[in-house]
Each structure stands twice: as C-alpha cells, then as structure tokens.
Image (cartoon, rainbow over all chains, first blue to last red; front, side, top):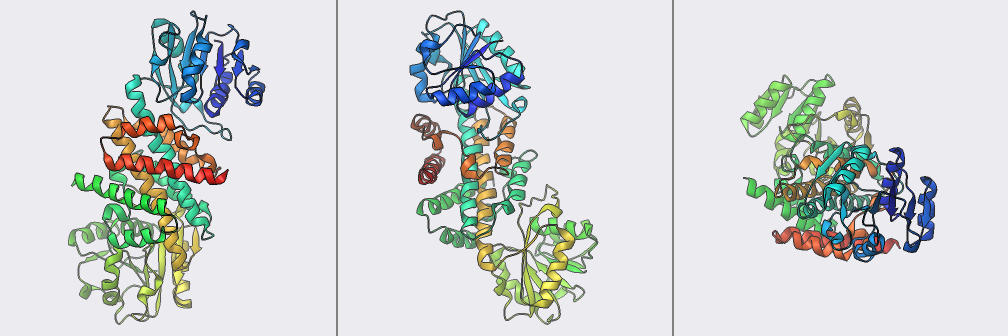
Length: 259
Length: 259
C-alpha cells in the first residue's frame, strides 16, 4: 500500500515510522516547513514537498495529520481531482464530515497516544479508532490499520469527540500534574526520580481497580487539616493554589456521591 | 526486631505485611475499630488491641500510622512511661517535633506510595524518607528501613511537607484525572480499558523526559479551536468544566514561560 502523508509533526512522525516498519511505501511527505518535511522524508525514504502543487497521484491513501484549524483549508487542496483515492485525517475532535463535498472515499484514522519526537512508541499497542464514508474507504482504512496495530476499533465522530476529551484528561492533564509536582520538588532540591515509583503504581493501579476505588490521599479522606496546610504551601502560585483547592473539592464531590 | 503498629489502615496494612516478610515480630496491632485490628492481626500473627491500656512494652519500636489530626491525641498515650523505646510516625505533612516533650527517642518513617487494601505493593521498591531525634532513634529507624526497602532517604520535616505535596499532585490528582476520563467514557459506553496504553505511556515518558518536555495536546499547542469545543463538552459538570479551563491555562502559562 502506498500512503502519502500531509504533515510532519509528532503524530505524523510516529505514523511514518510505523508505516515503514509495516513495509508500506510513502511516496511523499508534505510540510509547510521544508526542513520538517526533509527530516522526516530522509528517515523513511520518501520525497519531501512543501507545496500542494508538487503533490503526486502516486499514492492509494493520503493521511492528513495537521492542526485541526488548518484541516478546512488543506482538505480541498489535497482532495482536488483525486476522486479515486482514499483520504483520512487523524484528528480526535474533527468530524469525518469535514471531507464531505470535496471527495468521495474518506475516513478517520485516530491513533490515541501521546507522541513526542524524542520517543519511539510501539505502534502495535496503540488503539486506533476508525470511521469511513463508504465501502471503498472502509476496506482501505481497515487494511491499513491492521497492518499497523493489533487494536482496531470503529467509533462515530460524535463518540470520538468524547474519547479525545477523555484522553486530554488521562494524558495532558495528568502530565501537567507531574509537571507541577516536579516544580515543587526542584524548588526544594529533591530529584523528580523519587516520584517515579509512585507515578508507576498510580498508573498500574487502574489496570485492576477503577480510578474511584483506587483513590487515596487527603482529599478522599477529607482530611481538612492536611488540605488547608497544603493550600498554604502552594501560595506562591495563585493559579496552582486554586487548582489544588478545586481538584480537592472535586475529589470530595465524587466520593461523597458514592456513599 | 519487634515492631508494634498503632493503626490498621491502608498504609499500616502494607507495612504489616512487609514487616512480616522481613521476619520482624509484630507483638500488637492497635485500632479504635476492633474489627480492623483483628483482620490485620490475623494476617500477620499479631495480637489485636482496641484500647491503649492493653498496649504492652513488648516492642522495640512503635509505629503510629493514623490520621494526622489524631496524632496529637495518640502520641502521649502511646509514649507514656516508655522512655527506652523508639517511636515513629508515618505522616508526610507532620513534623518530627510532634513527639517532643512526650518521649526521648523518636523519628519519622514516611513511605511514599499509594496504598489500597485491595492491592499488594512491592515494599522493596518504595522510597522511604526518614528523620530521627537522636542516635538511638537513628540506628533503629535506619535498620528497620533497610530491612523493608532498597530506597532509604533522609529528609527534614520542612522538605518532607513539600515532598508530600508533590505526591498529592503526582498521585491523587493524577488519579482524579483518570476518574474524570472514566466518567466521560462510561457516559458514551466506551470501556475505560482503551485508555490504558495512553495512561501507561504518559507515565513511562517521564522516566526519560521531563514532564515539561513530555507535554502534548491542545493546551500546549494553544489550539483554541479544540480547547473551546472541549470546554463545551464538559458543560454538564460546572466544576469539571472550570477545572478543564484552569488546567489548560496553567499548561499554557508554564510553556509560555519556557519560550
């Protein structure tokens, strides 16, 4: 299968490497930034391009992996006069319908993972959520997904929005809590690495308990003594102190309802 | 070494099991609730007690592992007329000085982990933070800690407060983010298990990148389009919508400063 990539960001980079490993050919990689296209193209034996006039018809599938806000502008450029091809986007929050009116065979290929250029991920373990416009798109996107991962799901655009939202909580907001913890420790010359066993166990726990069952700490015990002291310790940063308070209240709310 | 436990909660339970595994004798286990004391005592061949008048002098070390707010009341009861013994508490936010005036040899034994009764943890991998009043206490608490874990640290009460605060961020608040994600998914009949590869990778990432470097998602890209849509999706729960907004702003703040 020949797959051309539109975009050369974190997700596109991981996808390109996985495609190469799955023996797919990547005829071209487009990026607005010449350097990004060139860096990634070199890694996967592809041709870098930085203008849509250079886009060839040489692929079976075109995967558009760019900022949500740019999709609307890019889709017409990529799809124009390629009605026999299949077009996919990778955006969690964008509907499959954003292709409507521009081409015939299209779909969504949403891999739910956090991608950083500095880290190789095992694509085989990443759940991918698919959607399609018609039977031709369905066959292509299904075949492609099964080459890359063992975890293939189908999900509507409406449900995918909520899935993406849950991923922001379980990944980006979680990581931000790590970040605040890291700042607190470094202000007291304590290495972040002392937190790693706790971070790992917190993640492992929700493999066998629900997060509700797994909760511990001052907020769930409603230990006002500790909560009050800790809010005071956060006082150097007003926004983070407010977050501490609100998160504690929210934990207490959820667990009060349970009882 | 003979170690009597005051308290039979989540931490005390894990500690009792680890003490047993390390071949320590646990003469008695105290809990206000008879049943809790009995359940735990049965597991580790100890004598359950529910009143301080039953406390024997048969231990070398007494570890007090109860709610912070109760420490002040319990310490005099436990320490009274036992000036040759060593007394420890396990509370992150309480100073070692809370023993002052009540006895001579005392210290802190703070294992930083999330303990739930339903889960056995490998105590050997848990970092334990120690403090002591004098040389006799130092020898005892050091010997005890090295029996139970490979990760022994010394930390002042002042720094330990911040360590505990960082643990609340890296564990309790993180777990609460998992919990909110879980609620979002279950409202759309999507199993929580689809999030596990993302949760695991988010935790693994901070073993090799700083949390600042590891951050991805709409807030760090300042993708207002996605942020605005997602705040709307959160609207059923006003407190959680506010948390979403505040967390996104806080991520943006931290990354703006970096640039």
